[in-house]
Length: 104
Image (cartoon, rainbow, N blue to C red; front, side, top):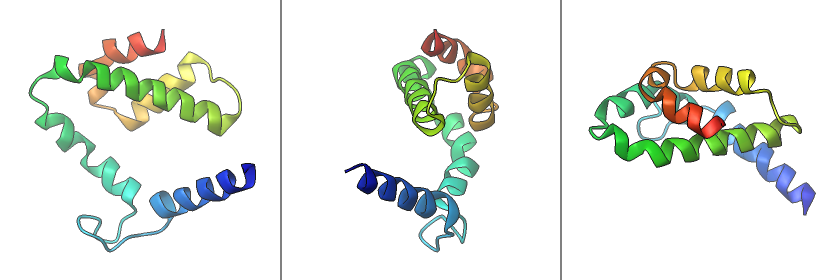
């Protein structure tokens, strides 16, 4: 079972982050790069910032869990914040208190 999970993880990483796609809106980029390129547009379209609070807290918890799985050990708070800044540079200013709440 562990080997199946490892194989699936490797395939997902290759599919989403390494292999360029020609699908709709990818234009030869990887799905992850398409997501990263469009995240600011998505944040700009959010009208009710308070309504996304639970989603952001859940997202940070998922990122923490993903980092724990990836690194095999808990990361210090500063490293997690560095990852969040890289993923959401402009949104961290708008939603910083939600990210802080999720990390506490």
